[in-house]
Length: 546
Image 1 (cartoon, helix red, strand yellow):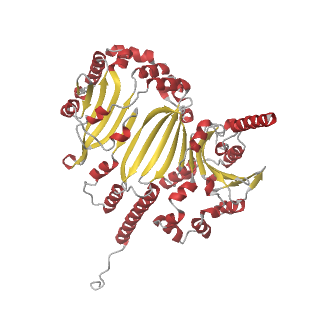
Image 2: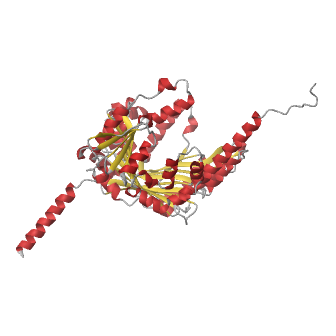
Image 3: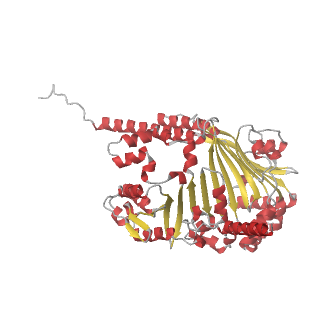
């Protein structure tokens, strides 16, 4: 019995250590400082939109039936797996920098090494794959590179290639002088290095990336804000501030799912420990729903509401090291950072309503808006309002600060009467109210209302009207909420809602894009026919010719 217990205990220990040391396979060929990463769960996407459905689209039919389309490309269009790529294992795309060179990469697993090599040779039959160690390298068109072993492949591409081709179309006379330098050797070196990245230099040991891929999703997205900021060539005057406190360890992840009638997006944002401690401490509990009920209109176009403890702003300013400068300027204007912290209670709302395209003002939009905040200390708030009025008067814009307030709230409105209606109180209930209630941050945008107003505009272009009608029949609204701290990150959820609630959103997007493509093709055909008619010479009157 003792031997059995010892063996069981030893087995548990081995399991725990092996689990802790196990790397994330999907991240082993992605640099740890990659700017963006997108992972497509092709198997999941295919279950929601099959290749047979894509084959029925107009763009597919046009490419497939085009006489200039080579047979090998038709073969791939018939069956993408003929490329040798194992799509069931997914595809990963990322953007990264290597010694100042930005590059775009695509990688995945192989189903057939032989088919994959032939597939890539079709792009340029004059090229021959070179073996370097256990890696096969092939130079593609425009100096792009593909490498593979018996299991994985990686394409490495220079983003400048695309921009140079666009430049070529704009000005072919100067293209040769502006063509990108040959970077095939550099991209080949990058490609080889990706196959042998050390775990400390890849995302294989990144817990946040591993957590992202564990989420059930059709698409996973990784955004490294710290790397993006560091890759920026210049921050100007902002470089004087300690912005590294905001960017350090700043990563956002997104999980996208195509469901019936909507696209779900779950976001998680990770910050540095120092910044996380501040945000956690001063994040509010939930938005003030009474402020939303007060909006004096049922025709709400969009809102952005949030709740936080105002003292947090002061702490964030101190974190940048700019508190001395800000305080000095504030005192000149008649208030202090302490006044700024006490002025509001942390309830904020921005709302837009009654959107309308007005033909009497040359189709310029009319709308009402409210920007409101809950009052904390009225005396401190008045100091800030007076400072704002002083600033705008110096700019010759006395009317820029139009506001009303009572003991609970201050409101800036599109008009004084609209702001007064808001403060008078209402009890409006909106369709999105229940979905945003109970969160520190909330957002709503009614896409359908915007499109509906644009549809009232008169136009002589039938194709524009058709495109607008297709959009009206597709897009409904966006509802987002979140701000809670969970599993070491701040979470947010967004729903992009479609009009049709019974069909998977990916199928709807496929149909929508296909219809837009057909409308655009019809427009091009009409333009070509019109041009041809103008180029036809008028008939010659031979009767009166002497």
